[in-house]
Amino acid sequence: MLHIAVDVRFRPFPTFTSAFSMKSIPPPLPAPVPQRISFAQATPEQRAQVKEYVWEELAARFPPVLKGTWAGALEALQPDLWATSDSVGIDAYQLDRVADHMDALPAVVHARAGHGPRKLYFGRQPMHCPQEVFRALAELEADPRAGGPAMYRLVAGVARRYAEAEQFGWSKAPAPREADGTDSDQARADLLARVAALDRARGVPAGHDPADDPRRR
Image (cartoon, rainbow, N blue to C red; front, side, top):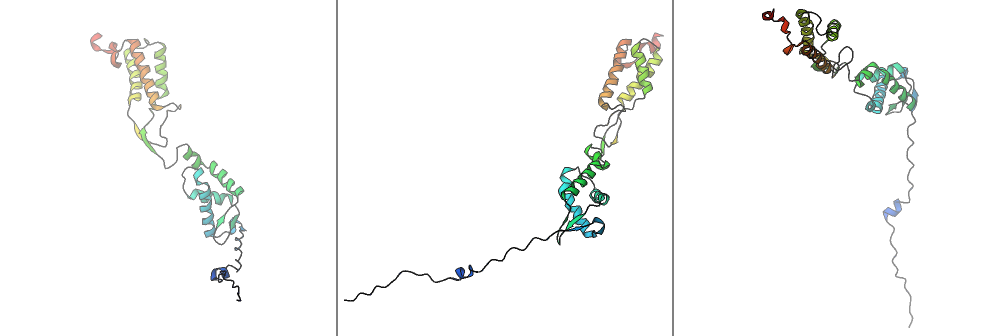
């Protein structure tokens, strides 16, 4: 009997996927090449774009300032711009120049020190005690028994009124200080302590000289 061998192995049909995969993939389009533009020749739109670019790059390094400050820095430095059809920026060197310029601006220096022009605090003001009062008080401290009761009451009373006066107002600093730079509240406490020490040295209870009592005259 004749036997015929038949090859029954599975041969897959070509699919659309395999056919399409044979097509070449086009290379990506090249990135747009930035063009250098002088600041003077930039359009208003390009200047606005570069201001936003600089603000986004540097704003986190500076205290809040008016946004016009950034535009002013660019106007002062006139950096060259690098522009494509959809973006405008400046190079790293020019960005550092803008940062240095901003660091030196009084508005930035004051803002970092807490003295921004729009940042005001309502609080107790320094006592502003005149130097003549301090000098008279120092003379009494050198000789507590010097002078009569009227003179003592005048000097001690004036010093006490300056130390105890409740003066409040707006200030550009959160903790206003005396003219010599000392803390205002501490200066008030120190002045009251000096007057109290003189009271004790003269035997004056509660800030009143007993020699001034008309019943003892």
